[in-house]
Length: 162
Image (cartoon, rainbow, N blue to C red; front, side, top):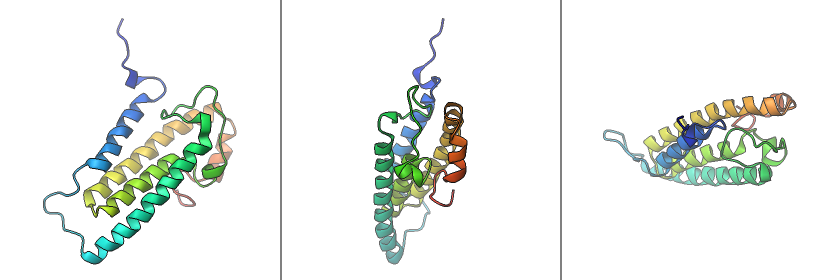
């Protein structure tokens, strides 16, 4: 009998592996490619300031989301068996504040380092979080009947927008 690798588990383990790879790409991936234009001094300064603020806001949102989850926190998209539905704190702004915060941090980092490729990696990370959250929300609707009403009230990843 062949044992299934841990990362192909039933709780969405492969999402965590892919997420880690994307976060590493954002953090230490190539910041430039041949032929890409450099940022002008004005845009560079604006990117550095705006990126720092966006990074900080994302960090605050992600930490608030983790704190609000408390013992429900897991890196896996499937909720814990003994989980309770959290709809307070950062979860009043978006349904996935940790993903939103990490994505904002990634975009902030890309702006901070004035890197077009890093902004592209951040966009890829955002699309990944959108896909991961879709799977997670199917499991949340199965576990919590009231989740559907919460979905109608609160945006998924960008407060008041998406």
